[in-house]
Amino acid sequence: MGVNELSELSELSELNGVHHGRQSQLMPRLRECGGLVRKGSVTADIGTDHALLPIWLLENGVCPFVYASDINEKPLETARRNIERHGLSDKITVLCGSGLERIETNAVSDIVIAGMGGGLIAEILSQAAWTKHSRYRLILQPMSKQAELRLWLGENGFDIVREIAVTDHGKDYTVICAEFSGNTESRGRLYPYIGELAECRTLPSARLTEHQISYLRGQLLGAAASGDTEKERELYSLIEQLTEIKEGILHDIGKGNI
Image (cartoon, rainbow, N blue to C red):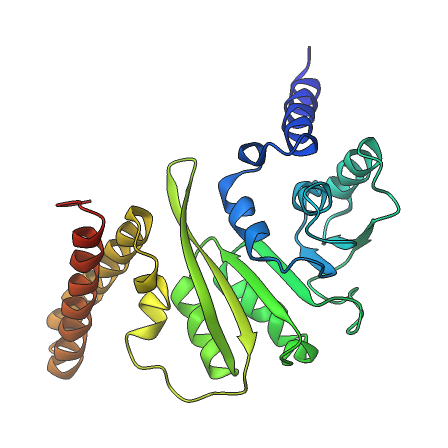
């Protein structure tokens, strides 16, 4: 049996789990994204790949209709087959396009963009100014540059209403739920590095906070080497605040360390 056949059998097994409502069969990152989609909403899944999330949303009664969009045609061929196997061709529209360019502004209320870098997610949103409306809920799962994405959201009037830390295949990720309020006031220097993770009192959120601390420690060493004492003081203050948050999370969940 070839690699492609094995891959297809593996995917069929996962989809069968989705079909029977076994939520554990959907990868944790996507499951958390799906959990933030509002019941009854028409949703767009951007970067859908093989349409596993749209199928899950339909099979679990979350959405009446989903748009599954991807920039590449090849994964969409598999997506169409998966959708057809589940008898959902009349409830999922497959679109090939970049970002949100194929999504009509009044067609959806919830938008999922998962599995991309934070910078790319920000770029996609910046090219769709129509998302700056309170009717839309953005569910974003950055694979990197979370601080950059949080900063962009704040500067463009989006509030992070909830943030979840999740472990998937041994790595920790954040899932951001954001809505437009128009408030562009600064959320403070700490905000890009922590967002609303301080409210997520879990071990993955503590580990993500430690990751930001490590990053800032590297920045601190660079500032010290260049003799930038003002930046040193600022970075040291951020590290202290994040360390306090991390220790508070660990205390609340009964863990002495990560």
